[in-house]
Length: 478
Image (cartoon, rainbow, N blue to C red; front, side, top):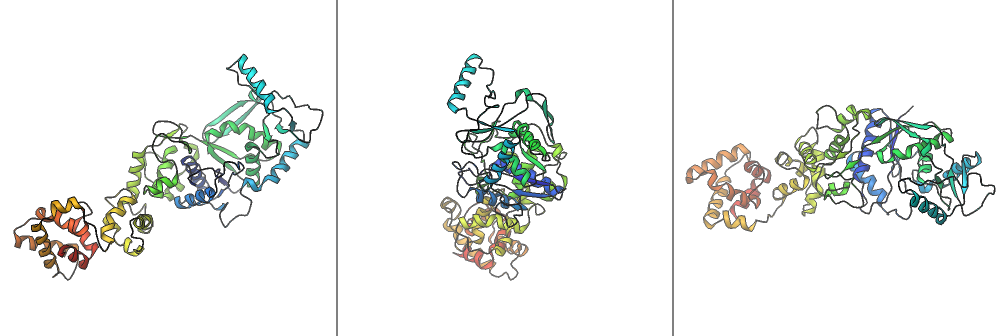
């Protein structure tokens, strides 16, 4: 049987982006499917029309593709053998399932008003605040068959237990004495989540259901629906939560920790997709003491059964360390990937017309010193730009009249170089220094400010090579 995993987010994010929790779920579902030569698909749970945000589903798919967690099939892809992949388009199928359960006597219509149930709940809580109220099955044996003004409830067992053999948390037992007849269809006929998700997973052939542990409590209800429909159960794997640095659950609607909480925020800060994937994988899973992984290594080594049970605490410093490893290591991020990553930030600086080949030719200059694509774009800017802007404070400090004259002299002296390489630049500059009775320490900052407009940047002679002979001499001579 082909392994089939899925990510099924709700398109309710105002920033049109995947929340960190969804990223981790999608990543683990992707890794598990790839490890077992299976299929990872995307489904959109958009049944809550009031909260759906236009464009959010497209934004989330864009995030997945940017991260390299690309769905094999599903919503928004060109491969849709089991369409539809949206809950809003599956309402007729949910009705069939609900009608089937009613016909089999496995569900029933409930005419209790919400006002009446609230009164019962308040009365019960007044008597015993520590005893959670649950629906007592008032309409289980209703003699009439209402045609409107009802919800549909699932008949649950009140004797025995449901055992969830979770791939991460192991054997989890839910006593049926805690059960109540829960609602599977609202008064307007629309399906509730725990009914719809089971119908969807059966229809789409999900074999391994990977999700956050906050869904573990829903699992017994969903298993009862699987059994009522005579369907095979998938395997379940409930992942620990992703928490902020202060240990609180990361919410997609509010976040007091100050850390980014969705993919677009990380993208805007210049993080690399491979680094985010690496770090989030390590947030809930480990392979010995190894910290840094390529995506292929993650697929090869990934094992759901060794995932941690404790919640992961997001650490921005550890993410940055992972980020730096990917930025500086060609085996983790190719030149083409690096170039693609830095190009948008060069465009933000007005360098959108620079060709990718030119950018690729100079990225070795910045690989070892920059930790984000924003930092890389900042260092590459004066190398790629025709006309640089000189920092005023640096100009005042390092480009006095005397220094300016020396830079003009150096520019003329370097004009004799035919082979514009780092070695020839060093030797010719040293020759000029000897003639003028100066040291490199005397002029290095003046040269740097003249050529890149600021006092810090990549190695000086390598930078001059990257800028090119004509531009370097022009900047020194002016």
